[in-house]
Length: 399
DNA sequence: TCTGGGGTCCTAGGACCC
DNA sequence: TCTGGGGTCCTAGGACCC
Image 1 (cartoon, rainbow, N blue to C red):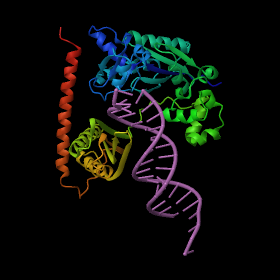
Image 2: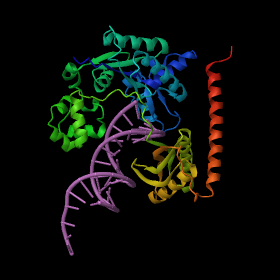
Image 3: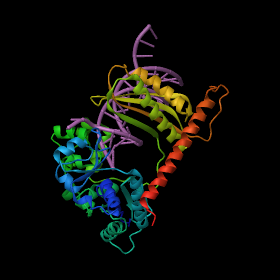
Image 4: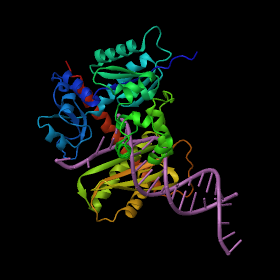
């Protein structure tokens, strides 16, 4: 007899908001989770957006990823707090460490979500009992709540954790799919976003159950073969993907900057391109990687994006080389008249930097470029150290 | 009210080779 | 002289996730 497969999906409730609340409470402030509140970028920047909203704020219509201005209009008394990514990283580590105690077969899905396969770690306990223990341990030790979804595969566990929030455990076993999952709107299904939802609804497909009952052929016509097959499997609660414990290697590194207003100033755009090139190349070097494909993308006022990518003859981590390619491509992409909202740069086709061949014909300037990068990296790590030190001092005041 | 930043994967069309 | 089909690689764009 094959053993029962049991997967948990653990999801921190309004993660950035909860974590900020814990941080503020440590310095004696009241619990912002109980107020209409939200975490955002710079609250004074009209372009910043809501990263996480409290449950009272959500009840007033505040949504994640909407502009701060819009949220303030819906909810004028909204308490806005700027996010602290350093702190979020620590909260995430603490959360993952506790989950790992319950099963080492753990896949981190994002900063605030993970799957664990507890099939072999249940002992005499019932899954529900164990999930409640895990949820309570996180609450007690770390001060924030999670939702846990339990199912026989990752999809069902993930769908279940999204049921009523916060601080809840839900099951979604195969025999519960018709009752608990089929009445939900198509948008609730994993990988069904806004565009797919529109297509489905236009064709009278409103619920997950409607998808599940569709003939494959009709679905293929709407969303393409591969996606259609996957949607049909998901809508029927089937998913045989394993909990992946190995962290996959990065396939690309990118950075982008949205200007405080749309600009067509060539020098300002070039400066932005330079800045993102420095960031991307620095991250490449820190990861000991080199890239052999560079891409540039620009976003216009209407949010349309165009991009160019190009392979380079030799994999590189040198800022000047990457910037040079990017500048050429930007020249082809942009007429230097239309104002731009955003400029971005990415690298891909990454390889480890161990086996680099030295070319006899290497550009003699390359030595200077590398020295410039070394200085940049050193300066960056000095700043990083100083920042961490200041951070520690602030967090642990001397007695 | 005026929409961030960082990723992954898929598709379609063109070039090129056999 | 004209016409195949398959495979691979590359590029551009789009959809989705958190």
